[in-house]
Image (cartoon, rainbow, N blue to C red; front, side):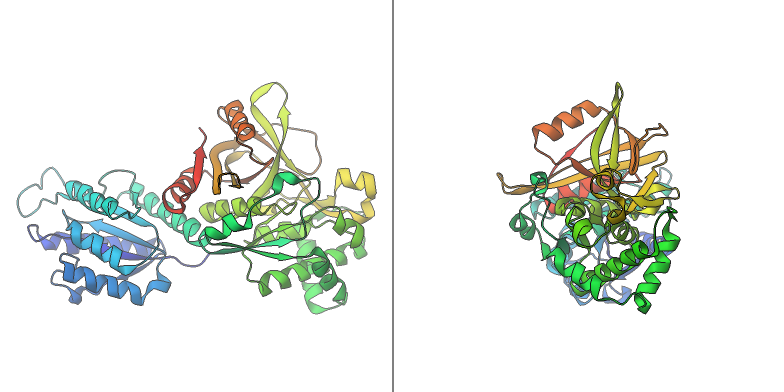
Length: 470
């Protein structure tokens, strides 16, 4: 992931000791540096106190931020004392930065409430938020109303804010690839390009035949093909019956996919994974999709564009590979558990365990294993997960989604492909919502609890309708 940098506004007010502002400012910048974040902050000599106090300071701050706009992922306002709500709001408004904003207030200490030591930032934060709300500027709050820069919980807040910035900034301007037409039987994955485009999401299309033609043009002994073949051999345990011809086909497909993604500047994609590629090229696409997802370019099955976007959002939030699965089976009579399964294109790092590279079991049985090699098999190990499904509601003309936290369990289940047993709080309520609201049978999963990041990103900044299940 690229290094993230934040624009910093240190607020102060003339009635209060400006030395308090300088002290917190130094600690704050050291904290950001220690966590690996960059800081864009108006040089201290540009204002009387080294902080933003007047409207003149605000204009200087805004101009400085404009100069560095391409470097800025978010704005953090820190209030070492009451601060000046007018200058803070004007600095943000005049900067024209359409990025998330975090508001922090340094707490008072009970033995330091004299005239020279008190902060009143507890109160000042309310005033800053009030002014931002009046100006229609969305913002994020720390987990506690006032908290010390030195608290571990504040570090967590900074990391969560960074995740919000990644999700919001990328999804506001993302290119997602549609490789092939959706399977005719899957009307469930239909979507509106126009609704997505209105939110800054561009869909880049190509016919599957163009990818297959590109793959077929590569010489079996080309250097890039050999390099990708080595990557495939190291990616997982390959079934003994796989032939060198099957492996070379996979390497050439991966090469063609890489070339197209790079040429089109695509950050996520959805692939026509059956049956055209098996019948017209002679392999499964899952392995190439898995490798790209594992490398940070999520690729969804069955040309599910909204599924790919759901994967990307979770990946950005957690900084881990995501997966696209079917909500596939009940788990016996246990009403809080279900099976999340796909054929599959699970990223190997998602599984937290070694994977096997084999055949599409159901499809191979029907049309022959020799043209169905390249599926990822394995069972996801126990641990925390978040699930997310984004969709375009064409009837209402908007983007909608649901999100929640759950767990993978160690429960066993005898099914081929990629398998995960999920335990979901109030699961029956969730699936009633999915059915009644017309969501797809696919959902994205990631191995981390990030529902709160998605809630803040989608609901506060992107303006999408979101149901948070709990």
